Each structure stands twice: as C-alpha cells, then as structure tokens.
Image (cartoon, rainbow, N blue to C red; front, side):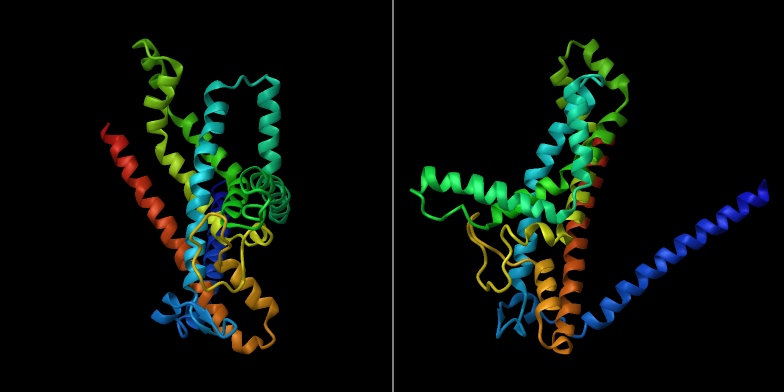
Length: 297
C-alpha cells in the first residue's frame, strides 16, 4: 500500500510540473516577444494608420470598462439567486429544480451562443423597444453598444458567480443562523446582517472568477458592441468600444502581413494578461481585507 501511495504522489507531482512548465513556456514566450514593443506611447496613445502605428489605450480602457460594468451587473444578480438557492428554496419544489437546471445548462452553453442571444434579445428587442418608446424610433440603443456587451457578458458569467456565492453561503455555520433566530431576528435580517457579511469573501471570489472569465472572452461581444478601429473613448452606455481580445482576434485573422503584425499581437496579449492580472489582484486584495474584517467581527 505505501508503494502505491508513493507512485500516486509521483504521478500527481509530474502532472503538476507539466502544467506549470506549459504555463511557464506560454507566459515566457509572450513576455520575451511582447516586451520588445511595449512602450509608454503604446499604452497611452490612440491607434492610427490602420492599427500598425500608435497605441492601444482605447482597447485597454474599453476592456476595463466592460469588465467593471459586467461585474456591477452580474454580482448582485448572482448573489440574489444564490441566496434563494441556499436560504429560501425547498429542494423538492418545482421552481428550485427548474431554476437549478437552467443555471446548470447556462454554464454549458458555448460562448458564441451568448453573443447571438445578446444580439437578438438586448440589441434587437430591448434596445429597439427603448428607441421606439423614448427616442421616436431614432437608432440610439437598438444597435451594438457597451451596455449590451456588458449585459451579455453578465449572463455568460452568471453561473460562475451563483455557484461560488452559494458555496460561500452554505459554508457559514448553521449555529450563526440559530443564534440570530434565538435573538428574535427574522430570516431576512439573519441573511443580510449575519450570513451575507460572513460570506463576503466568497462573494468576492465569484467576482474574481467572473472577471477572469469575462476579460478573455471575445465571441460574446462580436455582435453586441466591440469595434475594431475606434480611437475615441466611449462616453455613453450606447457607444461602441474597442476591446483587447477582439483587437487580438482581428490582428491575428485579418492582417495581410502576419510578420508585421506579430510584434503587435505579442504586446497586446501581454497587456491583456497584465490587465486581467491587475483586475484580479485588486479583487483579491478586497477579498483579503473583507476576510480580516470578518475575522475581527
């Protein structure tokens, strides 16, 4: 038996080393080739001359804005659904079964389908209805826009947030709830004043996973808001925007001179990785702070 355990330990260690080695090769290759073109002008200037000159600041700004808006939309919605699953739903009720099935199916839908859904529902239905009711039929929201891209990404990342927040809520000891009820608190008071504060680190974990998923997705925003060449920054929710992932996709598939665009590709990928890392780092710092505060409480 010890021999079998030793073999298992060796196999798992080899698997971990292989994964770390592959990650190191990929990241190292991006760093080596992307660092050559990385300059302050590249990070802060607007693109020009068919995207072969200038910088990618509008794409950086658009990506960060998209992720932040997506997080604002998806976290409250995911928390509400998770609270229902964890605290209110009866496991044998038809509503719980169908809602749980919907969430599970949503997690397995290809990302390109979310883009088509966003185009059909948000742009063609909701946006067109807003134009008819408030803008006398003038094309304002019934077109690809930042708001529809953020909502589409929110729908895409919703299952991730629901699952992580639900697990965090279930991890709160039942004794906390019992003590709150014994003091005369209602269920809603117990949830929002006792359970949810202790589960806030888990809520932040859901936000981190949503940021990680949303920052790298391209397919869902192909039809609902992303533009290839748009030097101006978005100033309204119905503006189109540039996005790093979409920019990388266009450079890698539409360029007539692959060798000329290869340095741009490497540097843009490096910037996307760094931006995703910074957004995750900020969320992790907030989560750590919340854990410290919850531990003192």
